[in-house]
Image 1 (cartoon, rainbow, N blue to C red):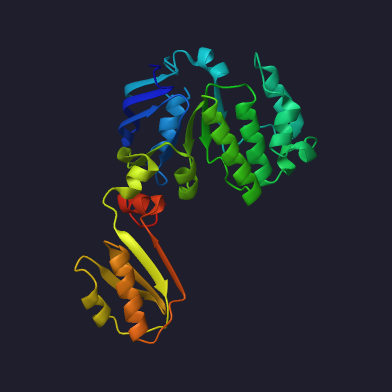
Image 2: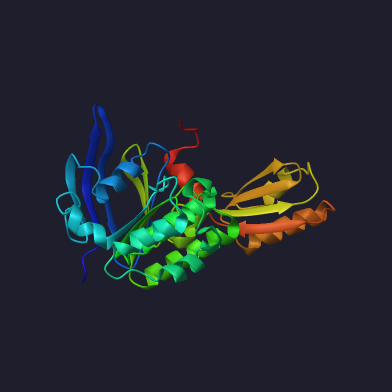
Length: 307
């Protein structure tokens, strides 16, 4: 069996007295998408930059495509693609020029016109980088990361600033990379993006891994069912609470919107429907579901604002 494209074991990184990464372990299999999630200051950027060979670890081991990313940085560079939020592009350079320049460094680059068309960059190919919109800069950065046919791609907030159409196209492209055997390590603040794209998710906080698994595993672990329904506001809840199992909790989240949490099954739905009928109230909308990845993320990292 092939070794993972990225192997991080007990990684440690310090900045003076600050312990930014404290024993993080991650594996990114070939042909898989792994999302590294965490609030600001959690250690994501330091971890990724060490994997890319731009920072030295203070402890632990890191292997990228079987090599030390610092000691063998020159050997790894042609085999990996890096997408940065800042873009790394000369402000006056035209979008098409930059993409052709990056392609010229690769032994077997992708077809530049085809990639330009795929990422809707044709109309801005002659536009200086500084005049591109945020979404156009992101698409150009993605194209630059992919044009060299990398075995491994690091994507930092790949759809930040993109419109819905560009975002969807980027998701499709990332899925195709995985199908072609490319390993992808991405960071994102969009939980729906991670839930949609990632085979595995690693959540870090304060430099440590606080959760890991597939999106399905993370959202199912310790999850409670949810039933949300709308009807007349300010209905008496005591009789409904009596009709529901003891494990269920019902609240009126806002006027006319009710939430039942617990072991939600057809009997619970029937009890809610019967209660509404007794009240002479028609259910406007009802929706069942489990926790989302965002729910899990907030449970693990806290709900308070970070600065």
